Length: 254
Image (cartoon, rainbow, N blue to C red; front, side):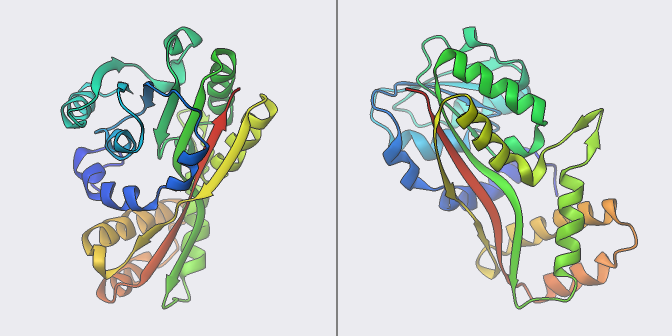
């Protein structure tokens, strides 16, 4: 892929993200949400999706460790909301950062965190009594039609890669949404989850091809003996219909 957090990749995936998120969870949100802090905001796609679905007025605090992405996020938000930016690693969030915040959001973030980092984040939200809507965490389930004999082996290798240790950190990968939901429940939150699978295929050929390249590359990095090159060629030559499993987690502190 062009880079997990590159503007080009984030722009390519934004329509699929918007379609996949479980809008039904919004009916469970507490009333009076006015200030939203978006963690790992990237170019602001979560804000662009959620802001029109919430009552006005709104103020968004875009939070990311990449200053270039923060600029794109602030510039790309709907004009009817106010926006500020905070250059910060989401793993360093404190209860003081949540003073006056009504909701914390993130998208496609939890699976690149560790168990300890998620537990710390949940504890911070619990101390501040701030609800959270965490969307599009991968579950590791990929289904393709038509099937290929190598599908399941590539899926398993990719999921191992997502759970890899890197820089002394063991990533949660596809275990993230269930782990986060359990941590929130333990912290006393009311938790609601919703499926949010990506739907890929010929109608999204550019995204599908880029996702397939990234998926197979990660699998090959984990298991170099896998014949991923001919598999990728087959899949791109005849693009299948693909469901990529994600889950949204809503945690409400009353």
